[in-house]
Figure (cartoon, rainbow, N blue to C red):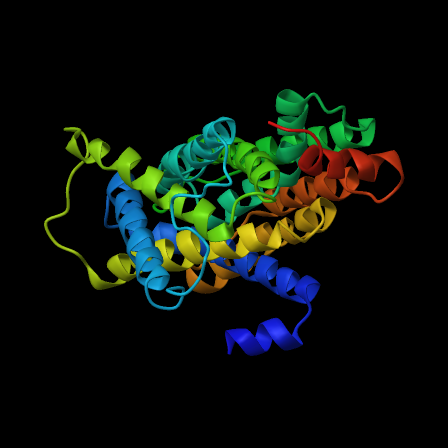
Length: 323
Protein backbone atom coordinates (compact mmCIF):
# COMPACT_ATOMS: atom_id res chain seq x y z
CA UNK A 1 0.00 0.00 0.00
CA UNK A 2 2.75 2.44 0.98
CA UNK A 3 4.74 1.57 -2.15
CA UNK A 4 1.64 2.10 -4.33
CA UNK A 5 1.08 5.55 -2.79
CA UNK A 6 4.73 6.49 -3.36
CA UNK A 7 4.44 5.40 -7.00
CA UNK A 8 1.05 6.85 -7.96
CA UNK A 9 0.61 9.92 -5.74
CA UNK A 10 2.78 13.00 -6.27
CA UNK A 11 5.02 14.24 -3.48
CA UNK A 12 3.15 17.55 -3.18
CA UNK A 13 -0.20 15.78 -2.80
CA UNK A 14 1.24 13.40 -0.22
CA UNK A 15 2.71 16.33 1.70
CA UNK A 16 -0.61 18.20 1.62
CA UNK A 17 -2.53 15.15 2.84
CA UNK A 18 0.07 14.57 5.55
CA UNK A 19 -0.26 18.18 6.72
CA UNK A 20 -4.05 17.97 6.80
CA UNK A 21 -3.82 14.70 8.75
CA UNK A 22 -1.53 16.35 11.29
CA UNK A 23 -3.92 19.29 11.65
CA UNK A 24 -6.88 16.93 12.13
CA UNK A 25 -5.02 15.02 14.84
CA UNK A 26 -3.89 18.23 16.58
CA UNK A 27 -7.47 19.51 16.54
CA UNK A 28 -8.77 16.34 18.16
CA UNK A 29 -6.03 16.46 20.79
CA UNK A 30 -7.87 19.17 22.74
CA UNK A 31 -10.89 16.88 23.08
CA UNK A 32 -8.76 13.94 24.19
CA UNK A 33 -6.89 16.17 26.65
CA UNK A 34 -10.12 17.25 28.36
CA UNK A 35 -11.14 13.60 28.72
CA UNK A 36 -7.72 12.54 30.04
CA UNK A 37 -7.19 15.33 32.61
CA UNK A 38 -10.61 14.58 34.09
CA UNK A 39 -9.09 11.38 35.54
CA UNK A 40 -5.31 11.91 35.61
CA UNK A 41 -2.93 14.63 36.77
CA UNK A 42 -1.62 16.54 33.71
CA UNK A 43 1.96 15.33 34.27
CA UNK A 44 0.82 11.71 34.63
CA UNK A 45 -1.20 12.11 31.46
CA UNK A 46 1.75 13.58 29.54
CA UNK A 47 4.14 10.87 30.75
CA UNK A 48 1.69 8.18 29.63
CA UNK A 49 1.47 10.00 26.33
CA UNK A 50 5.26 9.88 25.94
CA UNK A 51 5.42 6.17 26.86
CA UNK A 52 2.74 5.15 24.35
CA UNK A 53 4.30 7.35 21.66
CA UNK A 54 7.77 5.91 22.16
CA UNK A 55 6.47 2.33 22.30
CA UNK A 56 4.56 2.80 19.04
CA UNK A 57 7.58 4.37 17.37
CA UNK A 58 9.91 1.54 18.39
CA UNK A 59 7.34 -1.05 17.27
CA UNK A 60 7.03 0.59 13.86
CA UNK A 61 10.79 0.92 13.48
CA UNK A 62 11.34 -2.79 13.90
CA UNK A 63 8.30 -3.95 11.92
CA UNK A 64 7.08 -1.66 9.14
CA UNK A 65 10.38 0.25 8.89
CA UNK A 66 12.76 -2.64 9.62
CA UNK A 67 14.38 -2.32 6.19
CA UNK A 68 14.41 1.46 6.20
CA UNK A 69 17.72 3.28 6.23
CA UNK A 70 16.21 6.13 8.25
CA UNK A 71 17.86 6.22 11.69
CA UNK A 72 15.72 6.07 14.79
CA UNK A 73 17.98 8.08 17.08
CA UNK A 74 21.51 8.27 15.67
CA UNK A 75 21.69 10.36 12.52
CA UNK A 76 25.28 10.86 11.35
CA UNK A 77 24.23 13.71 9.09
CA UNK A 78 23.44 15.83 12.15
CA UNK A 79 26.43 17.89 13.23
CA UNK A 80 27.34 18.64 16.83
CA UNK A 81 26.12 22.21 16.40
CA UNK A 82 22.81 21.02 14.95
CA UNK A 83 22.32 18.61 17.86
CA UNK A 84 21.88 21.63 20.12
CA UNK A 85 18.94 22.74 18.03
CA UNK A 86 17.51 19.23 17.89
CA UNK A 87 17.44 19.20 21.69
CA UNK A 88 16.02 22.74 21.75
CA UNK A 89 13.26 21.60 19.40
CA UNK A 90 12.38 18.70 21.72
CA UNK A 91 12.44 20.92 24.81
CA UNK A 92 10.06 23.38 23.14
CA UNK A 93 7.75 20.57 22.07
CA UNK A 94 6.85 18.18 23.62
CA UNK A 95 8.43 19.21 26.96
CA UNK A 96 7.44 22.76 27.86
CA UNK A 97 4.57 22.84 25.38
CA UNK A 98 2.92 19.88 27.11
CA UNK A 99 3.61 21.27 30.59
CA UNK A 100 1.68 24.42 29.73
CA UNK A 101 -1.03 22.80 27.62
CA UNK A 102 -1.62 19.89 29.99
CA UNK A 103 -2.38 22.28 32.84
CA UNK A 104 -4.27 24.68 30.56
CA UNK A 105 -6.87 22.03 29.80
CA UNK A 106 -7.63 21.69 33.52
CA UNK A 107 -8.80 25.32 33.64
CA UNK A 108 -10.27 26.15 30.22
CA UNK A 109 -12.39 24.54 27.51
CA UNK A 110 -11.11 22.78 24.42
CA UNK A 111 -12.87 25.33 22.19
CA UNK A 112 -11.20 28.33 23.85
CA UNK A 113 -7.78 26.64 23.82
CA UNK A 114 -8.19 25.95 20.12
CA UNK A 115 -8.93 29.61 19.46
CA UNK A 116 -5.82 30.69 21.40
CA UNK A 117 -3.74 28.35 19.24
CA UNK A 118 -5.22 30.04 16.15
CA UNK A 119 -2.61 32.76 16.63
CA UNK A 120 0.24 30.24 16.19
CA UNK A 121 1.15 31.38 12.64
CA UNK A 122 1.57 34.92 13.98
CA UNK A 123 3.58 33.68 16.94
CA UNK A 124 5.87 31.91 14.47
CA UNK A 125 6.60 35.22 12.75
CA UNK A 126 7.30 36.90 16.10
CA UNK A 127 9.57 33.99 17.07
CA UNK A 128 11.42 34.38 13.77
CA UNK A 129 11.86 38.09 14.55
CA UNK A 130 13.27 37.30 18.00
CA UNK A 131 15.43 34.31 17.01
CA UNK A 132 16.41 35.11 13.42
CA UNK A 133 16.24 38.89 13.28
CA UNK A 134 13.52 38.83 10.60
CA UNK A 135 11.53 42.04 10.10
CA UNK A 136 7.85 41.29 9.55
CA UNK A 137 5.73 43.58 7.40
CA UNK A 138 3.60 46.11 9.36
CA UNK A 139 0.53 44.19 8.18
CA UNK A 140 1.79 41.19 10.16
CA UNK A 141 2.15 43.29 13.31
CA UNK A 142 -1.37 44.67 12.81
CA UNK A 143 -2.73 41.15 12.45
CA UNK A 144 -0.82 40.03 15.51
CA UNK A 145 -2.24 42.91 17.58
CA UNK A 146 -5.74 42.09 16.36
CA UNK A 147 -5.33 38.43 17.31
CA UNK A 148 -3.97 39.30 20.76
CA UNK A 149 -6.96 41.59 21.39
CA UNK A 150 -9.22 38.75 20.31
CA UNK A 151 -7.56 36.28 22.69
CA UNK A 152 -7.83 38.76 25.59
CA UNK A 153 -11.50 39.40 24.75
CA UNK A 154 -12.14 35.66 24.45
CA UNK A 155 -10.66 35.08 27.91
CA UNK A 156 -12.34 38.08 29.54
CA UNK A 157 -15.74 36.96 28.27
CA UNK A 158 -15.31 33.37 29.40
CA UNK A 159 -17.81 31.93 31.85
CA UNK A 160 -16.67 29.86 34.82
CA UNK A 161 -18.08 26.34 34.53
CA UNK A 162 -17.39 22.94 36.03
CA UNK A 163 -15.20 22.00 33.06
CA UNK A 164 -13.53 25.44 32.93
CA UNK A 165 -13.02 26.64 36.54
CA UNK A 166 -10.52 29.39 35.61
CA UNK A 167 -10.63 30.01 31.84
CA UNK A 168 -8.50 33.17 31.95
CA UNK A 169 -5.61 31.35 33.63
CA UNK A 170 -6.08 28.36 31.34
CA UNK A 171 -5.94 30.54 28.23
CA UNK A 172 -2.76 32.23 29.50
CA UNK A 173 -1.16 28.80 29.91
CA UNK A 174 -2.31 27.85 26.41
CA UNK A 175 -0.76 31.05 25.05
CA UNK A 176 2.56 30.10 26.66
CA UNK A 177 2.25 26.67 25.05
CA UNK A 178 1.63 28.39 21.72
CA UNK A 179 4.88 30.37 22.07
CA UNK A 180 6.76 27.11 22.67
CA UNK A 181 5.08 25.71 19.57
CA UNK A 182 6.21 28.72 17.55
CA UNK A 183 9.87 28.16 18.41
CA UNK A 184 9.35 24.46 17.65
CA UNK A 185 8.17 25.35 14.13
CA UNK A 186 11.27 27.52 13.61
CA UNK A 187 13.59 24.72 14.73
CA UNK A 188 11.75 22.06 12.71
CA UNK A 189 11.95 24.12 9.52
CA UNK A 190 15.70 24.63 9.93
CA UNK A 191 16.37 20.93 10.59
CA UNK A 192 13.92 19.41 8.11
CA UNK A 193 16.40 19.39 5.20
CA UNK A 194 18.99 17.34 7.15
CA UNK A 195 17.01 15.19 9.59
CA UNK A 196 14.46 12.50 8.75
CA UNK A 197 10.93 12.79 10.18
CA UNK A 198 11.46 9.48 12.01
CA UNK A 199 14.63 10.80 13.65
CA UNK A 200 13.07 14.09 14.79
CA UNK A 201 9.97 12.36 16.14
CA UNK A 202 12.06 9.76 17.97
CA UNK A 203 14.19 12.44 19.62
CA UNK A 204 11.06 14.28 20.72
CA UNK A 205 9.62 11.11 22.28
CA UNK A 206 12.85 10.11 24.06
CA UNK A 207 13.59 13.60 25.40
CA UNK A 208 9.97 13.93 26.51
CA UNK A 209 10.11 10.55 28.29
CA UNK A 210 13.17 11.45 30.35
CA UNK A 211 11.90 15.00 30.94
CA UNK A 212 8.59 13.93 32.47
CA UNK A 213 9.74 10.75 34.27
CA UNK A 214 11.36 12.51 37.27
CA UNK A 215 8.38 14.86 37.57
CA UNK A 216 6.27 11.90 38.68
CA UNK A 217 8.33 11.73 41.89
CA UNK A 218 7.21 15.20 42.97
CA UNK A 219 4.96 15.00 46.04
CA UNK A 220 2.33 17.33 44.58
CA UNK A 221 1.65 15.00 41.64
CA UNK A 222 -0.86 12.25 42.58
CA UNK A 223 -0.21 8.90 40.92
CA UNK A 224 -3.32 7.01 39.77
CA UNK A 225 -4.49 3.93 41.66
CA UNK A 226 -6.89 2.91 38.91
CA UNK A 227 -7.18 3.53 35.17
CA UNK A 228 -10.68 4.37 33.86
CA UNK A 229 -11.18 3.03 30.36
CA UNK A 230 -12.08 6.18 28.40
CA UNK A 231 -9.39 8.48 29.90
CA UNK A 232 -6.80 5.70 29.49
CA UNK A 233 -7.75 5.27 25.84
CA UNK A 234 -7.53 9.05 25.45
CA UNK A 235 -3.95 9.01 26.78
CA UNK A 236 -2.99 6.20 24.39
CA UNK A 237 -4.62 8.08 21.51
CA UNK A 238 -2.70 11.23 22.45
CA UNK A 239 0.57 9.28 22.45
CA UNK A 240 0.13 7.14 19.35
CA UNK A 241 -2.14 9.31 17.23
CA UNK A 242 -1.32 12.88 18.19
CA UNK A 243 2.25 12.84 19.53
CA UNK A 244 3.77 10.17 17.30
CA UNK A 245 1.69 10.10 14.11
CA UNK A 246 0.98 13.84 13.87
CA UNK A 247 4.66 14.74 14.36
CA UNK A 248 5.65 12.18 11.72
CA UNK A 249 3.12 13.63 9.29
CA UNK A 250 4.10 17.23 10.03
CA UNK A 251 7.85 16.59 9.88
CA UNK A 252 7.34 14.87 6.51
CA UNK A 253 5.11 17.63 5.13
CA UNK A 254 7.24 20.57 6.28
CA UNK A 255 10.06 19.41 4.01
CA UNK A 256 7.89 20.06 0.94
CA UNK A 257 4.99 22.38 1.81
CA UNK A 258 5.75 26.15 1.64
CA UNK A 259 5.52 28.05 4.90
CA UNK A 260 2.56 30.14 3.72
CA UNK A 261 0.58 27.00 2.95
CA UNK A 262 1.58 25.52 6.31
CA UNK A 263 0.15 28.58 8.04
CA UNK A 264 -3.08 28.26 6.06
CA UNK A 265 -3.49 24.64 7.19
CA UNK A 266 -2.78 25.60 10.81
CA UNK A 267 -5.69 28.03 10.61
CA UNK A 268 -8.01 25.00 10.43
CA UNK A 269 -7.06 23.89 13.96
CA UNK A 270 -9.34 26.30 15.88
CA UNK A 271 -12.25 25.73 13.52
CA UNK A 272 -12.02 21.94 13.74
CA UNK A 273 -11.43 22.08 17.50
CA UNK A 274 -14.49 24.29 17.97
CA UNK A 275 -16.66 21.88 15.98
CA UNK A 276 -15.31 18.85 17.83
CA UNK A 277 -15.76 20.56 21.19
CA UNK A 278 -19.40 21.33 20.41
CA UNK A 279 -20.16 17.84 19.11
CA UNK A 280 -18.11 15.70 21.52
CA UNK A 281 -18.09 17.75 24.73
CA UNK A 282 -21.18 19.91 24.38
CA UNK A 283 -19.14 23.11 24.71
CA UNK A 284 -20.63 26.45 23.74
CA UNK A 285 -19.26 29.97 23.25
CA UNK A 286 -21.04 33.13 24.34
CA UNK A 287 -21.96 35.70 21.64
CA UNK A 288 -19.06 37.86 22.80
CA UNK A 289 -16.66 34.94 22.50
CA UNK A 290 -17.87 34.25 18.96
CA UNK A 291 -17.00 37.87 18.12
CA UNK A 292 -13.62 37.51 19.84
CA UNK A 293 -12.93 34.32 17.90
CA UNK A 294 -13.73 36.13 14.65
CA UNK A 295 -11.25 38.83 15.69
CA UNK A 296 -8.53 36.21 16.26
CA UNK A 297 -9.11 34.57 12.88
CA UNK A 298 -9.36 38.00 11.24
CA UNK A 299 -5.95 38.93 12.62
CA UNK A 300 -4.47 35.72 11.24
CA UNK A 301 -6.03 36.31 7.80
CA UNK A 302 -4.81 39.93 7.78
CA UNK A 303 -1.25 38.86 8.56
CA UNK A 304 -1.26 36.29 5.75
CA UNK A 305 -2.86 38.50 3.10
CA UNK A 306 -1.06 37.54 -0.07
CA UNK A 307 0.25 40.89 -1.22
CA UNK A 308 3.93 41.41 -1.90
CA UNK A 309 6.07 42.02 1.15
CA UNK A 310 3.39 40.91 3.62
CA UNK A 311 3.48 37.41 2.24
CA UNK A 312 7.27 37.47 2.12
CA UNK A 313 7.42 38.45 5.77
CA UNK A 314 5.18 35.60 6.86
CA UNK A 315 7.01 33.10 4.66
CA UNK A 316 10.40 34.40 5.70
CA UNK A 317 9.59 33.99 9.35
CA UNK A 318 9.38 30.26 8.81
CA UNK A 319 11.73 29.58 5.93
CA UNK A 320 14.80 31.84 6.03
CA UNK A 321 17.75 32.06 8.34
CA UNK A 322 19.22 29.62 10.82
CA UNK A 323 18.45 29.28 14.48
